Every structure is written in structure tokens, then in C-alpha cells.
Length: 79
Image 1 (spheres, rainbow, N blue to C red):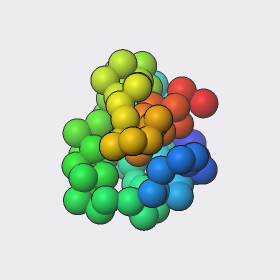
Image 2 (cartoon, one colour):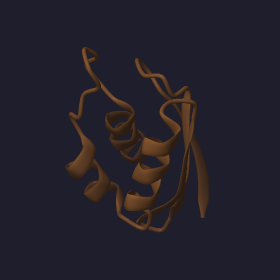
Image 3 (cartoon, rainbow, N blue to C red):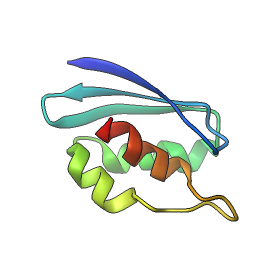
Image 4 (spheres, helix red, strand yellow):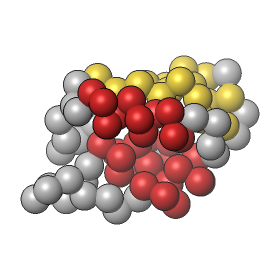
């Protein structure tokens, strides 16, 4: 298992932490941001592959921003 920290860009959350367990993504945690929503994203994406997460969350925008914490998670798991 590999613990990864991804520094976000353009969103309220400052970083995303997760574990890559083979092809599965686990233990997703965000620093900052909308606490309840980001906990829910982590729970819903638990055990998914990077490709599954990216397919579902890539391109999601937050308000007037060109990205969102969900979109940043998609980028993080593919990096």
C-alpha cells in the first residue's frame, strides 16, 4: 500500500490524502473544504479504482470555479 498526498489547486481544500492499495483507492481524506460533502465523497469512492473515480468525478465544477474538490480527487488518483 502506498500513502499519497496531493496538493490541490483552485479549491477550498488544501490537500487530499489517500492510500493506493493495488488498483483500489482507500482512506480518502481532505484537508479543509466542505467537511460533510468531502467525507461523503471519500465514503462513496472507497474501494473504487482510479479509473472509476476519474470517470465519475472528472470535470465536476464548484460554482464559478473551473474545478472542484471532486475534480481534484479525480486528478489526484490519476497522478
